[in-house]
Amino acid sequence: PDPPQIPSKKPITMIIPTILLLVSFYTTAIAGSPTIIIRVRTTDGSVLRVPLPEDDASTTLASILTSAGFDLDGADDESTNWKCRVGPPGKTSGNDAEIFDVSPTGGDRHKTAADLGLKHGSMITILPPTAPKRDNDESNNPKQDPEPIDAHRFDPFPDLAKSTSFSAASRRARAISRGVSRGMSYGDISRVHSTMHAVEHQQEGPLTRVYVCRVGAAKFQSHCLVHPPKKKKSKGGGSGAEPRVENRVGLLFGTINKERVDQSRKVARTSLSTPREDQKMCEVAKVHAVWEPPLQSPSLNGKHYDEECLLSTYQGYEEEKPSTKKRESATERALRVAGWLGLRPVGWIFSYADEDRHEDGDALPVHGRDAAVGAKLQIETMKRYGRDEGRKFITLALDGRIGATEAFQLSDVCVQMVAENVLSPPVVDESLQSTRFLTLKDPVVVSGEETKKLDSVLLLVNTAMLSHVGSYSGGENAPIGGNVKRSNGALLVKTKTRILTALQKGEGELEELCDFDILMALDAMLCPEDSEQICAIVKKFARGQRKGTALSEHLKLTLLSVLGG
Image (cartoon, rainbow, N blue to C red; front, side, top):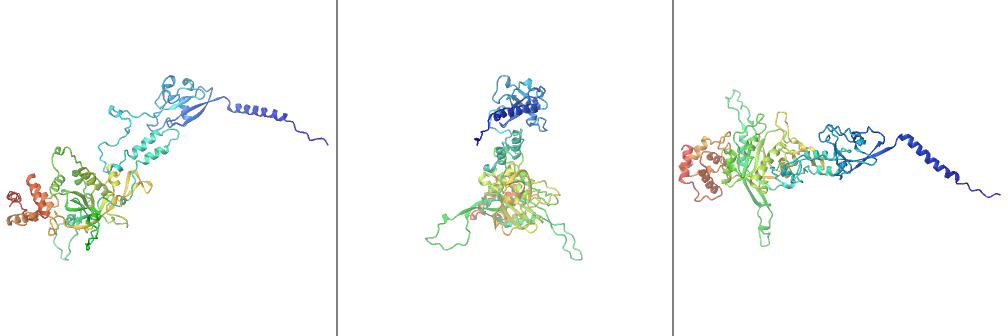
C-alpha cells in the first residue's frame, strides 16, 4: 500500500492574508472616515477619551465637552462657571496656556477643533472652580476655610465642636466634585460625615446628685397656680372653679460641694477600717434659693412658660466691659446679691402641666424645647464661671398641678449642638402639641444611622435628687405663698410688718432676712453699700456664726426708714 500523504500548508498561508484584507476593508467601510481621539482631563484627575471625525470642521469645543458628559448648561451657578485649557494641566506658557470660557455667557464655546489646533491625542484640561476673592488679611492664610465658623462663637466643649456645619461641608463637597461622575468620592463623603454630631445616651454627668430646697420648690409651685376671683358661694354649696396652672421659670442659686459617694449609716470603726480619705468622693449641687424673674408672661393662656424673660437678661455676658450697660436688670441684681451670699447659679427650674409628658413608658418631662433653653443657660454659666465649673448645671422639671419634681443634667453633645445652632427650639404656637421629637436642620448620627429627627430622651442625664431646706429659703416656717409679690417681687405688707416687729423687739430680724426674695426686694430699696453689708451679716448668720452676729444701729435705722417704721 502507498504511504499516507501529508496535506500541504500552502493553502493555509494564502488564507490568512486574505482574512486580514477583508477585515480591513469592512472596518474602513463601516467607519466611513478616519477618526481622532481627544483626551479630556477632569478636575479629579481622571482622563476621558472622545472620538471625533478627522475631517469634520464643525466640531466645537462645547460639543466635545458635552460628548464627554459635562453639563455646560446646568441650573446651578457653580456648575455653569466652566473654564478649560488646551494642553496638560502643568502647561503655563505658550499658546496652550490660553484659558477658554465655555460657560453659557462665555464666548469660547463655539470655537472649532481646527481653531484650537486639536490633533489626535490632544488634551483638554478642565480647570477647577476659582475660590472667592478674600481680603488681604485672609489671603495671607491659605489654609483658612472658605466658609469659616463664627469667630465669636463660644464652644462649651471644644472636643465635640465641629469646624464647619454639615450644610456648608456638603455644599463645598458637591461644588468640588462637579464633573463627569456628578458625585462625591469616598474621601468627600468621609469628610462630610465627620461634620455630623454623634448623639448617644450619656451615662453620667459632672454632678452625682442634687439637694433641692423643698421650701423653695413648694413656693415655686404655689406661684404657678392662678386662683380665680372669689365669688359668693351658691346655695348648693359649690366650692367654685379650680385654680389654673400658669407655667413659670426660675433660676436656682446654690453651691457645689464634695461628699462621700456612700452616704449610708455610719458603722463602727477600728484601727483596720478603711481611712476616710480613701473613700470615693463625688460632687453634688445644693440649692439654697429659688429665684423667679419678675414680669413673666406665659404664652397660650399659661401653657408655655416665658423663657425670654430669663434668657434675654442672663445671656450676653461681657467680662471685659460690664460698665457699658446702661441699666442693671433684675437678673443681674440677683447674680450680684447671690455673689455676696456666696452662691452661684447651679441650674434652672420650669413647670409644666401637659397631660402627655408621660404618655409613653420611656418618656421624660424634659422635652426638646426645654433642653434647648437649659443648654443656653448652661452656656452662659460656663462663660461666667469657666467651662469646668459652669458645666455643673441642673435642670428641674416641676409638675405645676401636683408639685412632683425630677432632676436632670444635659449631655455634653446637646449643649455643643445648641452652641452651633444645630439644635434649636421649635416655634411655639397653637398647633404645637409636643416637642419630644425634634426636627433638626442638619442630620446627626444616632446608633450609626443618619437622621434629622431626634428623641430628646437622648439629650438627658438622669440625676439623683434629695430634699433639704435651703439656707436662704426662709426656713421651714416660711409662708407657702412666699414673702414677695408674684408679679414684680416687691415685699408683701405682712412681710414688712414681721420685719418691723422683729427690728423693734431687737430679736429675730436675721431669721426673717434669711430669705433670698426678701434680700432682693431690700436691694432695690437700699444703696449697694448697705445691701452688701446686710448680705455679709446674713451670710455669717446662715452659716452658723450666730454668736455676736447682729445688725449695726445704722443698718437697723436704714431698714426702719425704708420699711416705713
